[in-house]
Amino acid sequence: MEHPIQHPTFNIQHLFHILLITHHFSPMNKSILVTGATGLVGSYVVRTLLANGFDNISIIHREKSDMSLLGDAKDKVKSYVADLTDVFGLEEAYEGITHVIHCGALVSFDSRDKRALAKTNIEGTANMVNLALENNIQKFIYIGSIAALGRNTNDDMIHEDVKFEDSPSNSFYAITKNLGELEVWRGKAEGLDVRILVPGLILGSGFWKVGTNGFFNHVWRGSKFYPEGTTGFVDVRDIADFAIRMLDHEGSQEKYLMIGKNVSYKEFLETIASKLKKNTPSIPTKKWILAIAWRLDKLRSFITGSRPMLTKETATTSSKLYLFDNSRSLDINGFSYIPFEQTIAETAAQYIEASQEQFVPKILKVKQL
Image (spheres, rainbow, N blue to C red):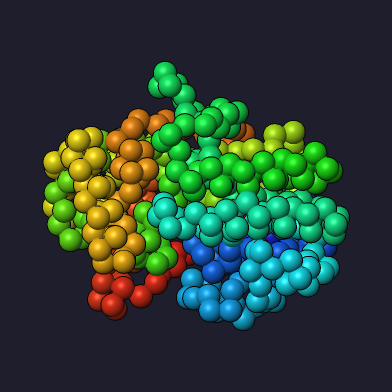
């Protein structure tokens, strides 16, 4: 018995969806420069661009940068050896560029890094903005930080428009990121089309001794203590996803909080412990304990010359309740956050693998947009 041929029915909504996706994520006629490409966010941006058909990508990196997080992606992009304060090197990298994703920054809460923080986060961003204006860049995307947001004093949700205020509790890192963001707004005032992404604490596999991956070490080693604060977390792959969506974004909003979920440090560490199959930290670290701890660590750092593991700023922020409003980011068509528990589970699985391989860097599979 012959079966009749089934012809696909024409679906105008399906066609419209295809056209919409093609419009918003077309790699055509885009030459993209990514800074900070050897770091966590920048490396995921580069690999997500490549995975979604973008092939005209340039990156800037220092001569001795560790390229581990790029993997084989480093062979598929054009590389320029330059520092964000090296204007002549940046000028060469800008040739032929149409779009910029500026992920490059220095993250440090060590008082010894004040000059380097100012040079990279303020002067470096000013250089990037100036060259973007000179080269008629079509879209300039800047990765900011929640450290540079204001803090509501009445426990309201923190949103994009809460103004940064001078405060003794501000870290120098926060000050430099705020001033760097002001350079981007200055660029907008001079005609640059900008988008500012403000991520919370960034989750995802990478180097295991830095950033939030230090909390995986904390649990793995059996620490019993947890901070009492709450903050916002986001998967690094969501930042890369959103940055790429911004390349063609024509909406009126220009600044977006990137927060997948507001989570207490207690829940955060409990989730990690569950996925690593380790004991859950169960003793809250009171403010007075943190106050002693950061002072002792500062003394240890001074005597040994090593980097502090805990600073006054990190001790203070880890004990406070900060809730962030991510509703503006969710208004972007087609965008959604990877569930918090999924991020922890996937990162924990790679952490366990890395523990058997001398903690080599790992990278998560990027999103298909």
